[in-house]
Every structure is written in C-alpha cells, then in structure tokens.
Length: 379
Image (cartoon, rainbow, N blue to C red; front, side, top):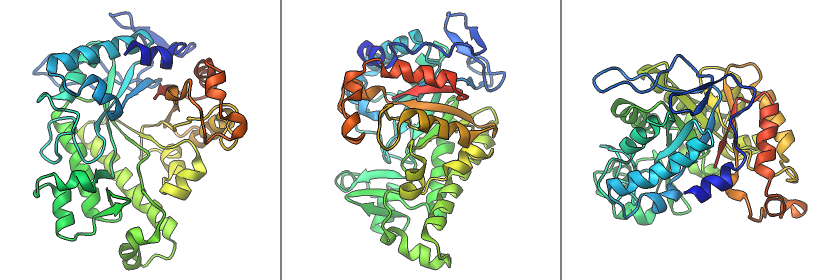
C-alpha cells in the first residue's frame, strides 16, 4: 500500500495557508464543515466528522482484490490499516470508500447482493469506519447510483433480487447497454430505489457523508428511454434527461439531509464541463453553482498541463468560476494513477507528459492551493 500512497501523495502536503488544527494523534486537520467531533462512544449519538478543506483519497473497488479478496476480517483490517496509515501520514482527512460500485454491496444490505471481492464474510464498511475514525479520518460512502451488473453476473443472482425481478417482469426501470444493466432515471421507481439505498447505508452505519461519481446516463442513444420521453410530452431530449438526473440528485441530497443536516453529500463528475452535459446530462452548473443539490463537488480534472482538449490550469479556472460564491465546496480530483503512464487521449504532444514529468501531481496540488478551491482528492 505504501507504494500507492507514495506515488499518489509524494508531495501531498496539507493545504498550507488553511486554518489548520492538530488532533490528539498529531494529524493536521483543516477547517471543518460544522462543529464536528471525533466519533463518540457506543450508545451515544454520533456526530459526523467532516472538513471544509478536504484532502481526500478514493478507495475504489478495483483495489479490493488487493486489500480485501481472499482475506478474513483480521487480514482486511491489517491491509486497510496500512493504507490508512500511509494516507494519514500525508494528511489525508477524508476517505471515499466504494460501498456500491455496480448493483452490489460492500456493507450489510438487504437490497443488494454482496460484492464478489467481499468473500470473507465480514462487514467491510464497519471495519473501514472503525479504522478510519480512530485515525481522525472522515468516511464518505461512495456509490454508483445507476450502474448495475453485467448480463453474465445477473444470470447468477437470485430471482428475488429487485433488479433481476424488474428485468424478468419486463419493467422499463432498468435498461441494457452493451451487456451491462443501468437504472433509467426517468422513472420514479428508479429514484425510489436509490433513496432506499442511501437510507439503508445512513440508517445502519456511522458514515460522515455520501458521494456519487460520474455514472449518470450511460448512452446518448435516443432508444435508451424513447418510451418514457415520448410519454413525457417534452420535445427536447437533452433538456428532459438533464432534468431527470437533477431530480434523482436532489432526491439523494434530501435523503441525506433528512437523516442529519451535518452529513455531507458530494458529487464527483468528470472534469470536462461540456462533456458532462453532452454525454451524461450532468447539470454540474446547477449542482456546483446553487445550494440544495450537494455540499461539495469533486470534478475529476484528470488532465495534464499540456492536455490538448482540457489543459489542467484553464480547466481548474473554469470550475472555480462555476462554483463562485455558491457556498458549495470545490475539491479538485487529481489523477495520481496516471503517474508513469502514457496518456493516449491527451493529444500527441501531451501523450508522455505523465511519464516525462514525475513531479506533475505536486505541481497540480500547488496550483490548487493557489486557487479558490477548498482542497483536492487523489485517485
């Protein structure tokens, strides 16, 4: 694990110049969203622990074969502890843990089947909360709201699984795109399932927040939701789809706040604003520019300084301008995973930037610190 954090966070020093405080463990922590305290003892009401100025890190399901699969509870706790110790040493104060990647669960769920990498019979999210909280690290449950299982996996699941039942009954709430199933946000049933998902997590775990990422509409093909669009009476497909996504985002936000106003809800869209609208119908200007849809937004600005289509600095400026003085916190997502790799979508002149400049993440962190953004997060 040290290798991952070392590569990702070599120069990831906590935002200098922020109003920072030290915890009892010595971890430097930045100004908080609220008067949040460390987790209280069992039997008392939990007070969420969150930070306005985040230094975040994602722990995605693609890492689960390494730290979770084939392990018992003690083995997972040990591997996770090593990951978190490295993160804490680099002043990470917020962990985004992948609890619901694709219609599955890495927590105790009555709605979804257990994720394939959780084969040790333990409560992964429960252990994450224990280990992160005792290190002063906030935990946000990270879900992919619309992406479900592949055809192949779906065939292996019980017939009473709600998504499979919808498929077998011919319900329109879930659609197949290139061999994978996705919820269709046009339907109230899909939105209701998402709010149930969020409620199940928040009602059973002491998470500090919840985050969704950039899996919104999976296709621009008009056939995906033709029936619902025609029945709506609307004439502009893009506008209608954008409204559908806004509705389910708002429903998730309201569900989070109904449990505790101090819990935070974040959204991590892709970094190119035009593409957010054109391909996924993600209304990032509304979510980041107006209160009531999210508390923080984490655009994935996974681009080098020399990227032909979305160079880092101008893209950072666009997001700073988008958020403005809305009160929504702006956290910049950085692509630590690209270090040492060819970036084939960056344009011919920038393909080797992540190989030729091993200092690129440190430079991007410095740029974030000089901007009006409230922090950064590493993937």
